[in-house]
Length: 339
Image (cartoon, rainbow, N blue to C red; front, side, top):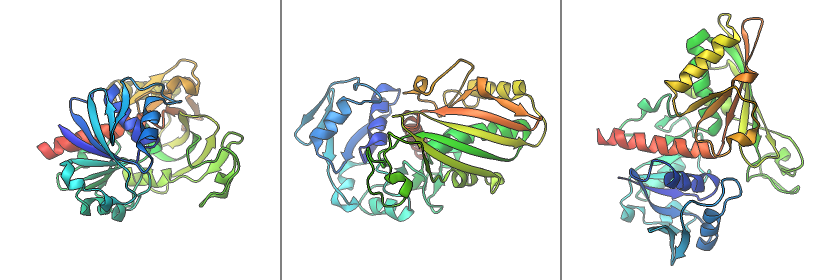
């Protein structure tokens, strides 16, 4: 049984816990602690009721400083610093760092110094981490001696399988991606100060807001052969959840719409089964809320212009899909440790 702790109980941390209870993970993974600066009553309330994903499927209550899920008691801490918790006493296998506060290896190593044996980060990390993993594509790169691994980003998990299929089918010379992403909790409901981006001072529910993205760096790290060949931009839109990437690729050889769609549909049934979807129905974003897959290709939107310019529309649940991938990476890491 893989023993994990969750550090940071926000949108991703709560989704990870919920995915564990809703999916096929509980016989393999046990949450033995949660660290979240907020109070435990609020933690329980936000577990029980979720505007995006609905009510929690099991009874949720508080027992002293434990979150009780059915019969399971999960001790909760409210520390602001890694060394404020005696992690070694928990007999952990792995910490899932879901606060989003750490992108440098040094931050993860603070937890290791405090008694955590391994850290799986819920966001893109600095180049000096042991591995950046998109599950389904390169999880074989995890090694037993690794201590700090990143699960990349929700957008990287979306685009890498698609780029992998397109590289194999027809080669990718260069391209662009436009991410249309649901609002996030670093945006204010009404105009307010923001520490890093003037655009993010603007009310989330009133505007389409361009934002910075590091997706091009994520693509390069996972597929170095595409270094400097993919440009990426992003914007936030006033929806709660589910995002989409509009991808345009210049291919190395001419292709047709049928060729592209067939290759993606085949990959969804084979190499990326359970991770990639393919549809030709008339969808809106809400149809993919709570979808555990990393990417769903909308085949009705595939276009090929002049043989070598391919346009693809790639849906993904930026919360639920990513939370499921974190658990997949954690399970795979445990299998590596057990070999």
